Amino acid sequence: MKSVLGLTVNGRAREDAVAYNALLIDYLREHVGLSGTKMGCDGGECGACTVLIDGAARLSCITLAHGCAGRHVETVEGLAAGGRLSPVQRAFHETLGAQCGYCTPGMIMAAEGLLRRDPDPDADAIRAALGSNICRCTGYVKIIEAVRQAAAS
Amino acid sequence: MNVGRIGARTPLVDGPDKVAGKALFSADFQTGALVGAILRGTFGHAELLDVDTGAARAMPGVRAVITGADCDVPFGVLPIAENEFPLARERVRYRGEPIAAVAAVDAKTARAALDAIKISYREMPV
Image (cartoon, rainbow over all chains, first blue to last red; front, side, top):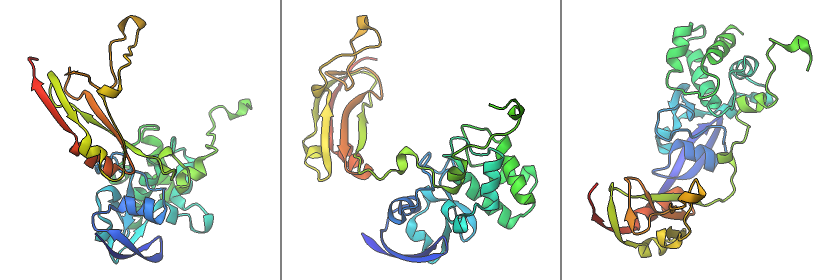
């Protein structure tokens, strides 16, 4: 069964016929065509699918698309307005906070959510905010450095 | 490579694409590829009496269903030990051994097809 879902994705209002049981990640990747949001564990454990819903970091693989009706969803593609990397994106690139890059969109969205509510987080606050985002390449030192650099910029 | 670069960070050539969400990973290609799923045994040791795939094959969106009956060529890590089959034949020898495989148009259909396969076992001593 499908019904019309109205929401905002990266600042743009949309209305789509979406199945009642569709997950937000599948709606974003397959319906909207935004493949930047990654499916890692498919169970809310790895954080690769993190997006912002009304500015707060949420896991799109355990969120129903229809649960976002009327809300503002932001994905990693929405940060680089006009093709310019956002401060968080630039910091992840410059500090080598991305290696294979698969966890990176989720890391960046979790960091973005943190910096919006706490513009100057210390390392503990960064660790807490990114605590449910798993990276199997770089470890976390450069990722935490990236968030601190973004906060300072 | 310039010696002066040692100790300096060299940005990834694909770094900007990765942080922008533009980098394409295998799962990001919309290729129309089929989705595979494997049905696994639930006993540590059992005689496999029958694997009925009729209902699964008849489901819309299911493109292929195979069982051990389709896999009669043994393989092995060493030439002297080519005694394994990709899907169980006649006996299941460990919990989780693959018994049947399905290819379908999407993951939901593939999972439903696995559920539609009926296996008859006779449990044996472990």
